[in-house]
Structure formats: C-alpha cells, structure tokens
Image 1 (cartoon, rainbow, N blue to C red):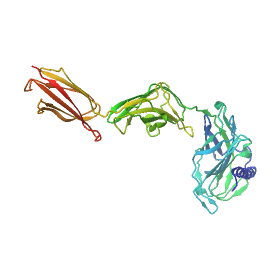
Image 2 (cartoon, rainbow, N blue to C red):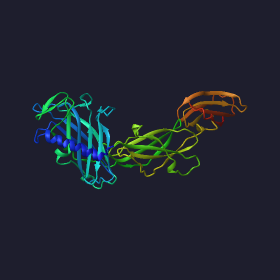
Image 3 (spheres, helix red, strand yellow):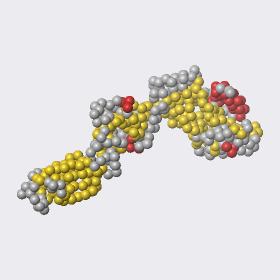
Image 4 (tube, helix red, strand yellow):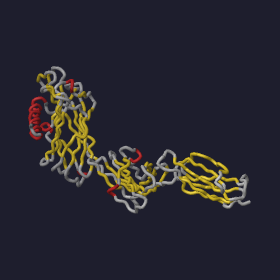
Length: 432
C-alpha cells in the first residue's frame, strides 16, 4: 500500500498538470476555501475548520457538486516534530464501500511534514455525481474540523499562525464534478468528470484560548435527610474561553465513623458535569454558587467529599483537584432517626411542652403510660413528619392522678426498611 507521503506527492503531481492546462491565472474565482475558527489551545493543540464556499457567477462555469481537493498549510511558531493532524469531525458523507473500483463517498487523509513546517489534507470524493455533496451558489459547507496535536509545548500561543503554502497554483487543488458533458477552457468533459476551478484561499487569525482558571471558597457538606448530603461551594472567580467545555467532578469516599483522615486514592467520582448540568462551570467573572444533593448508600457512616475539575476541551482532557481553603468536607449519616426529646417544665402542673428532633423524614407515634405500664393516652400515632424540630403541649388537667408518667416517643424512617424504629422514653412528674 502506498504511504501517505507518496500518495500526497502523486496527487499533487496529477493536479498540477490539470491546473496548468485547465485554469488560466487571473480568472475570477468560482470557489473559496477558508481556514476558519482557528483556535490555539495550549499547551499542545490547534483546531481549525476547513470551509468551502460556492462563488459562482453568471459569467463562470456553473458548479454545484463538489468533487475533491488537496490543501497544504504552513505553520509558524509550532514544532511539528512528532505532531499529528486528525479529523475532529467531518462535514462530508464518509466512504461507505467500494463497488469494484468505484468510490461511493469521501475519504480524508492528513499529513504532517515537520522539516517544512507543513500540514496537509487531501479529500478524495465519489466517482459519480449522485454521491457528491451539493454546494449551491453563495452557500458554504464545512468540509471538516481538524485538530493538530503537538508533541512539544506551544511556548508563544499568540504568535501561532497558519498560512496557505505558496504558490497556491502548485500546492492547492479544488475540483467540482460535472453532471453533463460540457466544454471548459476549450477542453471537452464528460459527465462525472472532475473539473478544476479557480479558487480563492483565506485563513483566519487564530484565537488563543487558555485553560480555565478557578478560585473557590470553602467546601461544605451537611446531612439533608433521607440518606442524602447537600454539598455547597462558591467560586470567587471563573475564567473560561468561548469554546471551553469544563466543569466539576464530585468525589466521595466512605470514611467510617472512627476515621480521622482521608486517602485521596480512595475517592470515587459520584457526579460529573458531563451528566449533571448544575456542575458545569458557568464562566462568571465574579464567581457563582453551586450545590449538589448526593444520595448515599448506607447509614451510620461518615462520607468525605472533594471536588475535581475537568477541562474536556483539551484532548486528552485535563483533570485536577479544585483548590479550596479546606479541600475536604465531611458529613455524618445518622443511624437513629429520633435525635433528642425533652419536656419542660418537669415536674409540671397545668401543662408541659414536649420538644423533639427528627434527623430524617419519619412516621412518629407518642403514647403516655402510667407507672403500671397502662396506656393513659394516645397523643398521636403514625404521623409522617419531615426532618426538623417539633413540639406539642401535654395537658395535665385531664390526667387522673398526681403521679409520675412515662411519655414514649417512637419514629420509623419513611421508605427505609433497613433501619429499625428508634424511640425514647421521658419520665414526667405531674404535680398539682
């Protein structure tokens, strides 16, 4: 199989002969090929679009179906040793199959010539008009987006430039495919022949897009009930470029109730900006507030959280830890649902206020017993209440005797069968 360098040389030789015989220098261009959206992505990437525009006018040979092209660019302030040029995305239908010697789609080949500071793209097209792309007059088509990946760091990104190899009549070629027999520049062409056309070539000035910067305040984590933890953080400064695809990764580690430190290697990613829109970096110059509600698998444990940051614009993506004044936050997941209960005043005369705290959404029951264990009163039973602090008044005027009573409070978590009912008993004294 012919290697890429030899293939490019062969293609250029054929198209040079074709240009010399078909294109008169100075003809008004009927097409335009532009290198647009040139973005320098330090430390080692450059991206650009290759765009074709039909500039046909009534005095020129009409064309609508694009055939193929070869394009060479020179680079400035880039070291191409070990570099690769890849098609990031294509705007052309791919070659589907070969039927005998017929080509039924488009195929792209790329080349890097380090000693000459050149990069090249050759696009081979279909053999018949039916399988070519349509480019109407005064319309454009992106032939492809390309990514130049370097082995060496770009030391001065603002000085990077791309330019067409000169003379363009030798190194560049751009052809359309004719759908019918016609004569161009005194030469007769059959249907499905490729015809070279006068082309204007342009290159955009690159835009430098540095990696995002981030400054953030203290990371916080607190239990929010129902085996969930609310993690909050605030950035004080965010800077992103116009094409940066970046955001936070939430990292979690099971610490255990007795642990006092964490090990970075044991953190797992539980949420990513690629799946959760709220974790995407907003690019706010004055900073922004972020929040995420994490569902944990177990109770009675301590979970530690950290934030990572991912810049997915760079390929391979750059991942690093976000820097906070305290980069690790912990939250304890309670095993008991009923945290505390107290009656005041106690002893009491007319009434007493009973206060209790629920650490989770639960169904709560309250009974009043006498010293013999007999139920004196059912205050409420199986009432669902969210996480929070509650109180009720116990009226002593209706109690039969001045004596000691026992108030039993029990709580059962909602939708969590793994946790047993938690309860507490208060001894209260009625004194008239």
